[in-house]
Length: 171
Figure (tube, helix red, strand yellow):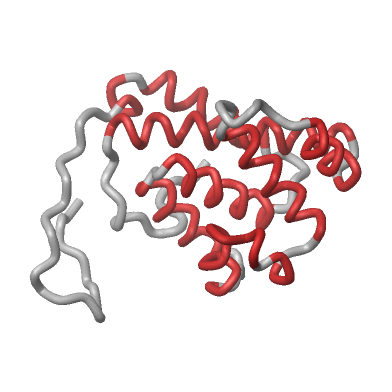
């Protein structure tokens, strides 16, 4: 893996990449494989674009640069618009870019991701349960939980963003 990247618009004097701290996935391949299986199981039956939006929003909240890089690229590759990805960090001010179902999923994503802000409020859960039937809601909760787990590996390990290409990790 190279450390140089073709930035067509970036100046040559970019800050150096931070060194990675630890790769749990390399040191513990069984944990990594179990996480991949968990990820696949969690998103069964969910709209793949919705899953990417959820993964991006959780990764923004957790400031996981590696996962932001991966899931923004995956979303673009899946046909998501740059505009909707850019607006995700301010989705409450950009509600008209998203469906009511997506908005309910984003609100639930934030509540589940930031449990220190009063847990998952009843109104957020109730709104999600209006837009997702019970099994699909369980899948959404599982998908939110899995990206939060990935974020914690990425942030703690200081995994380096910028080198991911969609399709790198075939599951």
